[in-house]
Length: 327
Image (cartoon, rainbow, N blue to C red):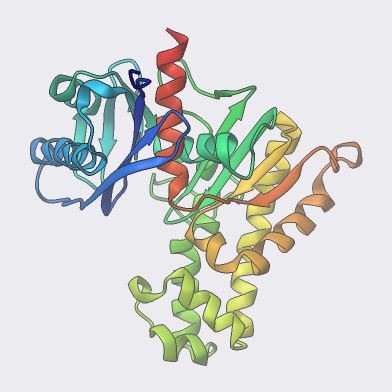
């Protein structure tokens, strides 16, 4: 009796510090994976080779050949050209017009679907996690910046040839601080982890947050989400106030999305939320509800992401499957 052939899919997460490739079977069970560090100073050509090397290692770990893979999805940082399957710009990697799709397809022969990394994570939550089966899912992911994504009736919400849902660049405070794109008062400028960490560092330097000072000092690069959470748990009131001020602005993004899209589910994810879910989500929900039209206050659920680091690779692989089966 002959064995039933099995198709495989690969999800790839191209992060700022790591590359992760995971091989899935048709039931999206992990059968192999590989991880490498990214090297921002190695150049684009070497970086593309490192991506292919990571994929080769994942195939070897899974014990399968490239010919058995039906498609690969890759979640990438930065703005993309979806038709050319290129990263237009990835400042953290030092890449410009990086042909990630062509590089992988030329090396392995299977089709590649390129997506924004946050879009891939939101699609993963829609397919397998906190937004499973919902008509409209919006993801808001505060981190170094603030990423957003939307799945509407099973499809990513996209521009004609680019990603969209750049929630972090919605202006919320005219004349406010400057974000990474040089704009004043965007959501990212006032509520991203980097902004929160900067304000916390200043509080610690002034002697207003002794627990944070003891835990992480005043160097902003050392004030990570876990240290901020620790300081709040130990009673640094000013740190809690800083986080709650950021929640006020994150609540504004919820209000905007509810009034524009009436989503069934809004998923909050990322390291900041993972570290302080019980501190942040109730505040965001409460403050959003005050600003939402009464008739729309019960149309959505606000929930934490479920999949953690798996969201990006699972979502990317599922996007590849969707693209291949649609053709």
